[in-house]
Length: 134
Image 1 (cartoon, rainbow, N blue to C red):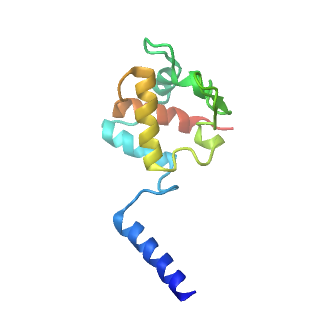
Image 2: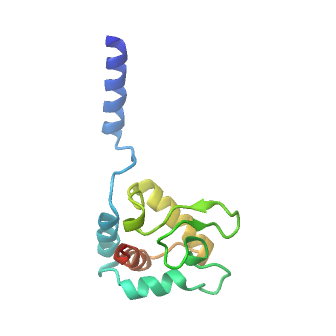
């Protein structure tokens, strides 16, 4: 039993020392603050809503999968896979894992824009999503 405790403690210390990202290491508000700082200006709710619902010359918008507004379960436009609500007030797990936030912004922006989103675009979308309340 002692060796199991020692092993568990050693594993925890190793993960903590290496700074490996884990779930619930951030909040939607912290993500908004981060991307607003990177953008050099606060996220804009109205611009975020327009960005979220616009197709940007392609066949998809963010809303194609996440819905308008993104407060209920969505459905991937291509695969049909269910997607949890994106607005943080409707999904407490939304934007709580930095690695997942970065991964999904990268992947979804590429799908919608054929490029990565800018810091301004991310801040605006996060401002919009954080503004949605029940």
